Length: 93
Image (cartoon, rainbow, N blue to C red; front, side, top):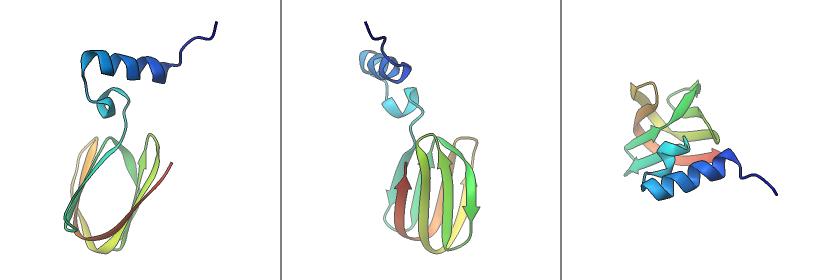
């Protein structure tokens, strides 16, 4: 009999406890407010940062944010806030 994976157990536990899966599974969550703000939760560090391109490491891969005049307004241990003109968000997992 095959044992369930840790990921599957965590998913099932999140469902039972009615908890958001991004918290239990350490999944990144990206919230885009218009084209002026981007909020990314559960990041693992900044890989690259310029006013036109920001690359962020996550548990599921790399998030690339392209735009103009972008600034990291706030960077916490697990979340970042980007302001400026966000033109494109790409996720490579």
